[in-house]
Amino acid sequence: MKVLVTGASGFIGKNLVTKLKEEKDLKIYEYDKDLDKQTLEDYCKEADFVYHLAGVNRPDDEEEFMKANFGFTLELLEVLSKYRKQCPVMLSSSIQATYNNSYGKSKKAAEELVIDYAMKNNTNVFIYRLPNVFGKWCRPNYNSVVATFCHNIARNLPIRIDAPEKVMNFVYIDDVVNEFIRLLHQSVSKKTDFNQTYYEVKPTYSISLRRIAELLYSFKENRQIGLIPNLADAFTKKLYSTYLSYLPEENLSYKLTMHCDYRGSFTEFLKSNQSGQISVNVIKPGITKGNHYHHTKTEKFLVVSGRGVIRLRHIISGQSKEFLVNADNLEVIDIPPGFYHNIENLGDTDMIVMIWCNEIFDKENPDTYILT
Image (tube, rainbow, N blue to C red; front, side, top):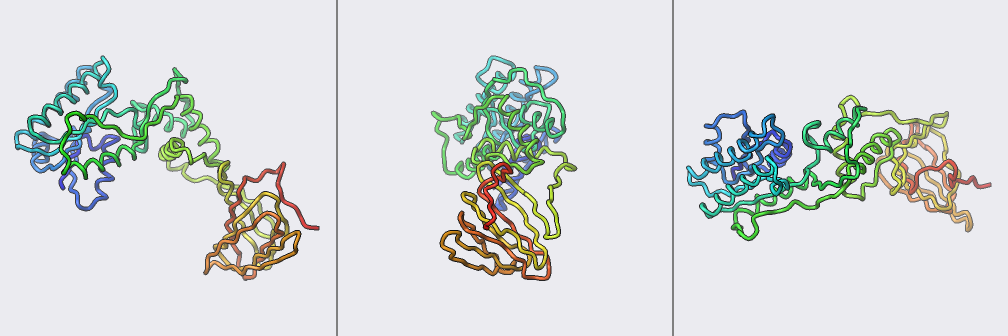
């Protein structure tokens, strides 16, 4: 299938084209305003499906709204009709198409052109009135509050919130792209239902500007201590991924605090208020670490380098168990509450142990007891 994408270098276009190119049975024609009209004709001749994403939303002159959003849509559809194309057209519109402003009027006019094209050519059209779209590769300080906040906060620049309690609707770029590609695969066999010309991207998130700013600042502050947000919340998960995509490349790495002594080192890697903590324990040859038990805290040990033995003994029954562990045969050992335990390096090189704990270490209540 041959697919034409207008506005291919825009925010949605870049994400969509990247995903489309991952499908080896598609040929992608990328069109933007810097290409000549003959190129548009050549692409339209070949296209089996058109993603019409091109448009403007912040021109210097308001007259550009109608020229670009209505005018280019008209030009595109005339070329498709010229070559008697019946390929489906998907139009990226805006929720502002119902607004009485220059931008909204131009998007509504483009929608009407597409609907008329479908009826005249007996083909499929799909119109998406998108709310605010957020995600990687969106241009900051332009028309996306999330992109601007992410860019500025990641660079220690101030942000401005005129109406912090204002609630806005958002969709995530990957959800948009996945919906558009689903549409591509269904469009060949599905004729347009003219009672349903408009389609939606789901899920939609309604959230205040204040909350977005709070989340982004928490991502920035907690990154240095390894605390990750609650990724069970879908919006937080997607916003966190978006924020990280705006970090300057020189800031992608950060140091961890290593607690070192003659026995080796202990370093906290990741922390989560919902899922506990992951740490890295380096143990020198011949050294034993641990020799304690917990009441509520549970752990999982995984030796990823070297070899050793993990010993457990029930503090009431005295029942004991030993596990020989090594990096050549990865094996997770659960450490339940109420079991005295230690780990000894039996090799002649450093042993590296990944440790997951069900709670973040609290020095005021460590729940760690030496058996006397």
